Image 1 (tube, rainbow, N blue to C red):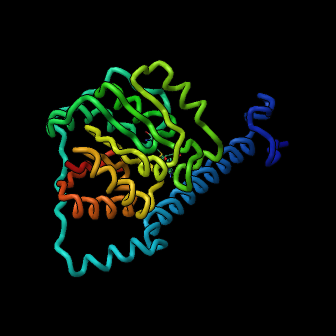
Image 2: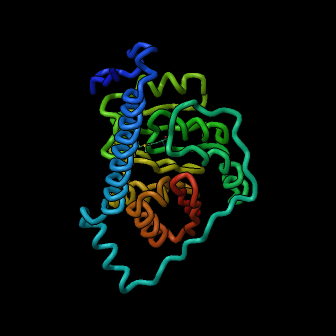
Length: 255
Ligand SMILES: C[S@@+](CC[C@H](N)C(=O)[O-])C[C@H]1O[C@@H](n2cnc3c(N)ncnc32)[C@H](O)[C@@H]1O
């Protein structure tokens, strides 16, 4: 008689004699097809959410309508001349992975100073660690609570602080970007904006950053149309040039 798996039973718990039956293999195949279908459904839903993010924001609609009468902002492709992995990276999963290999090229190409870097959106510290290889000091600002696009659903400050404990030139600040920009009068060589990916937040944080740094980087210009639109509007108001790197979900470079 063929063994049927209980839907809640793990295939590993089946005795080896039972694992030879066709029913067992059929069940394994059925489960992997279901898992793949569920993954594809989630991916499709996530893509729809990202593509329609701006439609839920009044400020995004205003920006779209204004484009009908104002001159277009050119977007220059950023094509790296060389790539090299920095000496240290934090072993955590991040949508930012890959960008660390072009930071040296960006720094050289645009003649960016090496002293002070500020980052809005640290999460588990992947990008922060990469920046720390190029600057004397890096300040990382994050609520460490996550947001609707970076679902972590808990306070992860302690985890990030532990990930970055061996980087002496990084300081972390548990702070909302809005509170930070209300009190900081400083200027930086480079600011990285990678917070919640709404148009309004990226625009507000980005415009302040463009006024306090010679170079501003924005992550997710390809995966989030809202971020790209915000960068276009910051470029328009700040007079900076907009270069766009297409890989690793997109990196907007304003210089
Ligand atoms: C996409 S993640 C940053 C990813 C990170 N740069 C990396 O390399 O993996 C976005 C982060 O922005 C933070 N964030 C969202 N809204 C914020 C706000 N209003 N102020 C400060 N941080 C915020 C979230 O807590 C989250 O950690």
